[in-house]
Length: 230
Image 1 (cartoon, rainbow, N blue to C red):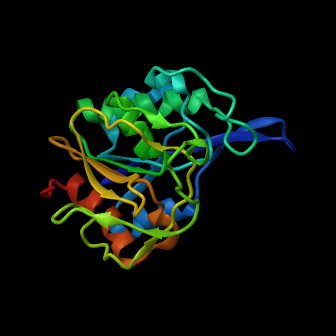
Image 2: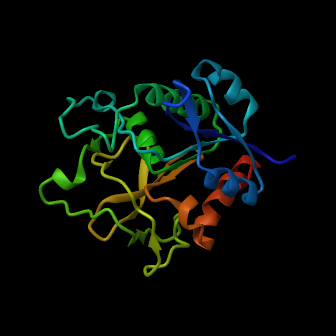
């Protein structure tokens, strides 16, 4: 049996039909399928327990919405949110609830972009709310290389290989039981892993570039769901 991968989607509002709608890039489902998994999309946080019981692993996807600063004990600032990065507390609730359920069950979790930030905050870490506004940080929103730790899950990325990086928030304080696996050339954390659970994440977007290194991350998720080694 192929492992079932639950995908946490984004959501929005369809003005034509005046109704909420679920958003999921087909890149995510394509990558899961090509890695040997069966993608299933989560629709309702009230079904979280059933999702955890049914699925073998969780994919926390990226998205434009910011995680509300209250989740990591800081005060909302004007530079959070806005038209390009709206707050979405319903999505926060879905992502954090699913993450906790899968972690409690010891099931694999792969976070991408916003998903990395969710994992860090869930473990007590904090975020830079707006990187361009942070003194001393010059993290440009463009493709860049990453400096991977040897023998980490991202060591397949060479020092010359660029990743697709699109984010204005980033890890400030690292969460409990997490270790840094890669940084950008300017020192910002770009990949993390739990020290004892099969939970890992990258800040970049492997579902967009889909290089061999990117595909290996989805294959790792599927392998972990099959009971493979971390």
